Image (cartoon, rainbow over all chains, first blue to last red):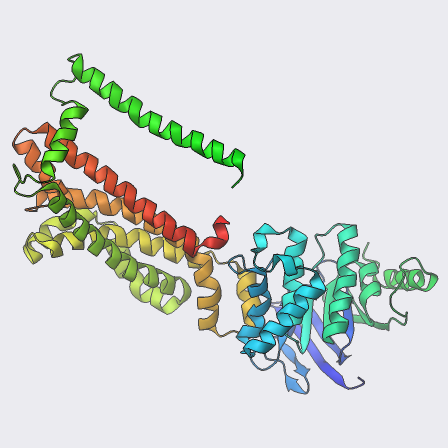
Length: 246
Length: 260
C-alpha cells in the first residue's frame, strides 16, 4: 500500500504563452482515492488530459509504476464529464468495451461485466441501449465501464457535475463501493468540496491559474463518513478557506 | 403490442387504403364525366397493365422484362455506388491523407449533373447495361460519399477520447467508434442515393435504351399510347416504394440502437 503507484514530477503545461499548470509534483499510493479541487477554470481538465496523454505536457513527466504513462501500456480509464456511453452498444457491451480493447479473455470479460452489473444493480437492463435509460444511469454505465477494466489509474472529471443532490449522494456511495471492490487507484476531479472530502483519502488543492499545488491534505475520517459530523465540517471549512475563489 | 396500439395501427392502415381508393374514384369520375382529355380511366390503365404482362407490343418487351431490365441497371449502379462511395466517404472522413488525395477529383465531378454523362457513356459503352449503370452510379455515388463522410466528421469527440484513453489504436477507434456513429447518416445518404438512382435511370432510358421501363414510356409517347405511359409511371412508383421499404428494413436492423 505504501508504494507510490503514480508519480507526477514537475508537470508544467502552457498553451502558447498561457501557462496553465506550473510545476506540479505529487505522488499517489496504490489503491488511493485522490480528489483534486480548485477554482473553476484553473486547469483541472487540462491536468487530466495530460495524465491520459491526450495532451503532451510542455515539460515534466508522469510515471505509473515507474514507467512513463502511456495508454497503450498502462490500463488507464477516464470517466468524462459529458455523457460518453456508446449509444450503439448495449449496456453490457458498453461495460465490456474497454476490456475488449485490452484483449482480455472472454471469461474475464464475462465475469467482470457481471460483477459491475451486479454492483450497479443494472442486471435487468443489460440488453438495453443507453438512451433507453435515464441520464444518471447512463453515467453509471460509464463509471462501471471504467472500473471494469481494473485500471492502473482511473480518472474522473466531475462525473456527477450535472446530477441533483440526492442522486449525487447515492452515486458517491456507489463509486466508493466500486472502488473498494476493484481496488483501483482513483483521481477524481471536482469543484464540490463536500464531495471531495466525502470521497477522498487525500485532497489536492490547486490554486488559481496558473495552477500550482496549494496543499495536499490527508482526510483521516473513517468510512462511511457522515457529512454532518464535526470533523467533516472542520475539514470542509478548512479546504474552503484554502481555496477562497470568491 | 397492446390492443390499443393495434387498433390505432389498424385505423391508420385504413386511412392509407382509403386515400388510394378516393384517388382512384376521383380519377375514374373525372374521365367518365369527360374532363380527362387524353387521360385514360384507371380501369383502362389496369387492363393495359394486365395485357402488358404477357404482350410485348408496342415497344418490343413485356412489362416484366422491362422492369427486370430497369431493376438490373438500377441495382448494378446503386450497389456499386454504395460499395465504393460509403467506404471511401468513411476513409476520407477519418484519414486526412485520403481526404486530400481524393477531394480535388471528387469536388470536380460533384457539380456535373449525372444526366450530362449520358452522351459520353453512350459513345463509350453503347446503350447496354454498362452505360446506364454508370450514369446511375454517378448519380448515387455522390450522396453516399458525402453523407458517410459527414457522419464520420460528426463523431462525438468525447467518445473518440474514451477509446483513445483505453489504449485503442487509431484504426480501432475508426472501426469501433467512428463507423458505428456514422451509420445513421450513412443510411440517410443511401436513401437519397436511391431517389437519384431512379430519376436518372428513367432519364437515361428515355434517351438511350432498347428496353426498360423508361424506354417503354418513351415508346408509349411515340405511339400515342397514354395508357402505356401511365403503366410505366405506376410501375416505377411501385418499384421505388418497394426499394425504400427494403432499405428501411435493412436500416432498422443495422442501426437497431436508434429505433428501439
